[in-house]
Amino acid sequence: GIQVEQSPPDLILQEGANSTLRCNFSDSVNNLQWFHQNPWGQLINLFYIPSGTKQNGRLSATTVATERYSLLYISSSQTTDSGVYFCAVGGKRNDMRFGAGTRLTVKP
Amino acid sequence: DARVTQTPRHKVTEMGQEVTMRCQPILGHNTVFWYRQTMMQGLELLAYFRNRAPLDDSGMPKDRFSAEMPDATLATLKIQPSEPRDSAVYFCASGPSAPLTRGGVVAKNIQYFGAGTRLSVL
Image (cartoon, rainbow over all chains, first blue to last red; front, side, top):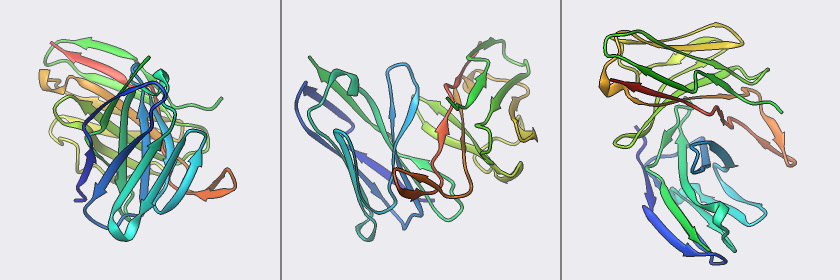
């Protein structure tokens, strides 16, 4: 199956800082999503981005499908951004595989 | 506000007991996914359905786990008999099969997650 690697595994930031999270995958994908799991365990879809670039407020994501990676950018981070960010990819069968996640801690 | 509903939110049971977890997908969604999250394994896909038919359950231990969709508004995941190693958070997610427009962009296969069922098997 498709392998998904996320980096860094842990990230600690001061409020207001910017960050870049990376997701590498081992094969071509039809589906790529970024999720945020908040400290209460809820998983929220951030982006559906199998290719290209999207922006939503302080968050943006870019996927370069030909090079098999995706980046999630967080600008002007806030304490509410803390949690775990997951990249999930799916092939033609839409069987999503999740990376191990990046645990982000934003300190006030 | 449409959401995926999972019940129960928490379940504590003893080894050997049957456990049934339920999921109500978002109305109109016809793909349903079951995931399990543990510290050691992270998020794993157990099974998924489209139009109530199982498409893939290769991630699910067949001897004790079973997943069904008796109707379009209910998906169930059963464990019988349960074991301590089954302790985890079980998530259900649903999604539309047809492309939907989100912010002016056609987006397919977005998954919406329920709040999860936290299972502890003693």
